Length: 254
Length: 358
Image (cartoon, rainbow over all chains, first blue to last red; front, side):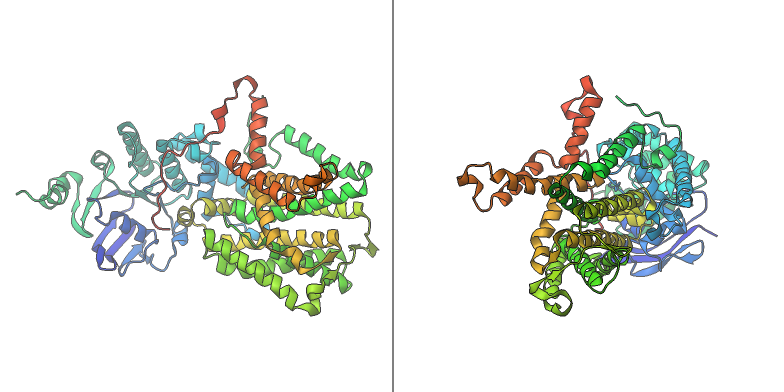
């Protein structure tokens, strides 16, 4: 069974059909990329899967169960974590605190009880910290651990956001333009991380990306959207020479 | 210069991060415990007032500084605590029941505001809480069967185990105990998952949701705890004043509390304490200085608000991080002595945040 199945998904904002009858499915362990020109509906699609938007029609199945009755805040508990296109970190907190927020879904102590720091909370805190340190090691951000996010360079912020999503311990990771704003070296590095996440952590990745070198490097399959509709799906090499895709990106030849 | 060599995660989790913390805060606690031996009853009263303000400020800090919900209505929670405490004592309750009852009543008020307020933010929330404070003030006047209305209400002295505590040093210790207990409670919240959830909600609601934080519930929780702490402050305040009437808990008190935490340093426990010390002692200082100023200046009406205003504007212009922020800079100047640079604390925003999906 596929890990995530999107069936006939549609969403209109007033008269604008942002996403129109999109269907695809993602198999466990693959890196699935969604590409398309600006305004194609890629981010809208991701926001529907992470439940920030509600589709006007269609179904999203995760492990065979519908995601549509979940609120956005219940999505990480289902094993799905995401990053944002324009970094959404907690700026007035340290990198470590940011990652620890990612452990929120694994917290079992009720809120009201936390004003006395009982031994079970202490144990849980140590365990959260240990998990977070594993991720800090994995992404090599130990140097920034105690720094405030507001002073960090953009490329590091991108990595911290990725780390925070990993702290959720998801089985499916949604990445909204992981390479946007990164220079070529950082983009290449991001490719290595995504590869490692898939291979070492066994996490399935759905990513939206504009950088074709990154898509070529890491994606197993590619979905092309334009004006909210699916143009084609397949291996990157087949997709990039597809006449509809060329037309969507470059326009009609006169 | 202190270099921390971390060897276990517990070092980051503990409240006292290193021995320096233990020594200095221990000394502070010791000196506050010994203060009644050396300090006269007038200044003991002033210190109690500062601690009460600090407690109310701590409550406001919880919801405004840590959770990012601006409240212009915290005087209402002080009032709820004060009247609940006075009412309970008048019915013959001991203080061990009356003070928690004050916190509980205030917390219920907090929940009543928080449920609708969790859908508001920014300026709308400020206006909403302001309206709530005005409603509470009017409500106190209308409920004159319990509260004495505009005539006010006398507050009996605290009772512990059948003993009446009339002396100012007894109130001083009561305030100190409640303040220290609440500071520890807040520190524990802030190093637990719920404290991090609050900071997450403050800095980015969108990504807090995407990480599993229940935003509305976190806001309501913060409001309730904040109201309870402020209610304790109200109970102690009623003892300090010994006579309460509705106009004490007007908008001016709410604004004073907000001013306090901004001047003290938003987003830190220290900020609430420093702010209360500055605001509380400034008032006393101005009153004392009036005797020495030339009569033309000293007897001018509106001297206090003028000075308050100047100080507030000064802080916003020159030290938005508040007294605590300034203190951190001074401390690191000495810690790093020959190496400190003026730009050490300058932060630049290297990117813009998205406004989408708000």
